[in-house]
Amino acid sequence: MAKTKKRYICQACGSVAHRWQGQCPDCAEWNSLTEDAPATVFSQKHDLSRGGRAVEFVELNSPAELPVRRSTGLKEFDRALGGGLVPGSAVLMGGDPGIGKSTLLLQTAATIARTGQSVIYVSGEEAAGQVRMRAARLGLADATIQLASETSVRDILTTLGRMAPPSLLVIDSIQTMYSDTIEGAPGTVSQVRGCAFELIRYAKEHGVALVLVGHVTKDGSIAGPRVLEHMVDVVMSFEGERSHQYRILRALKNRFGAVDEIGVFSMVSEGLEEVSNPSMLFLSGRDQPLAGSAVFPALEGTRPVLVEIQALIVRLQSGATPRRAVVGWDNSRLAMLLAVLESRCGLNFSSAEVYLNIAGGYRLSDPAADLAVAAALVSALANKPLPDRSVFFGELSLAGEIRPVAHSSLRQREAEKLGFTSAFGPSGTENGPSGINYRGLGQVANLVDRVMAKT
Image 1 (cartoon, one colour):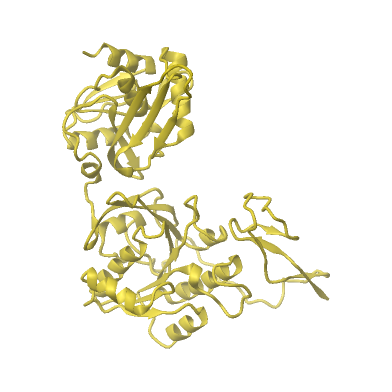
Image 2 (cartoon, helix red, strand yellow):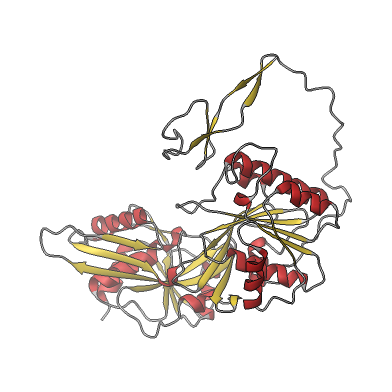
């Protein structure tokens, strides 16, 4: 005999509690626990070894034909996906409101539709007229996209079942979808999980490439249960600052390719344009060397990108509390580098305000940026420019050692391609192309000596 038991699910992290609480015990979010559909608890054990169907197994070397990727028509999108869309796959794309997710998917849908493939675009946030106005503004009105404004998953799947499966199905967004078989308002954990399951099952059974748009929370993670990210095959993040024109499409999870691959786009009045050489975008306007400026060859997946790191040091009057402001990098890592420079090199940052900025609104997570950040800080403190046409890369330890990083030759080749002539990095690292004069450094103190002695 079965009995029901109440449960409460956190709308922020998806954790389950058996009684209501004001604060979620897992993510510490307030007033986020809501009652979910009652769970059935069986008082007796049930034998699950009988009554099911036999599962068919295949060998790893089975001669069955593997799925072929379909190009999106946008090279940067294909790069982030690992080569294109896989039939039967589910892609979850998140990003801040207004960053351009719908614009990117509408352009992708139009490009695929112009090749003669069937594309269905379902919007749960906008009316069909609004989407058509955007398409007209972007010059996509001639694309044969089948457009609908609907939020009921039952109606969507019923309609799809009466027609041939499309090549691409876009759902914008999964938080607006609802199922009449699940209790709760659209956007709740149970609704998001249930609707995503039904749509993904349809895509798997019919070989349809499914793209789900997901909302994000204030900390940038995709809203809803974390199980949603496990259900899909690819999780992508569309990043960028509204005040800057660039946008980065980053793969956070990819069952069909490498993660951390990026595609770079530029937002213009006609929509999103692909940026084939993002290094030129992030280094634009750099005419002459300035104090506090260092160039770092970042690595995004297999793609090197040169970015400019800017530092500013302001001396304060005695008694004032210095500020530490960082844009585009980890604040705690800056505090660690300042401590290393003070302890190992004898530099004084305790009585100065420190400002660090990654030019162009770019966000760095590569640990190899330590040396470039340290070079920018030392250059700003000494008010001396770094060597012209030079790049810096290397990870710093708490002992002040400069440790090797991955793909140093790839970073140097990208620097040579853009006209740089020298590189500073860890000692013992293999030299890059012949056009780059590589200078290995063992300690961060060696870098400080070079900058301080530069006239």
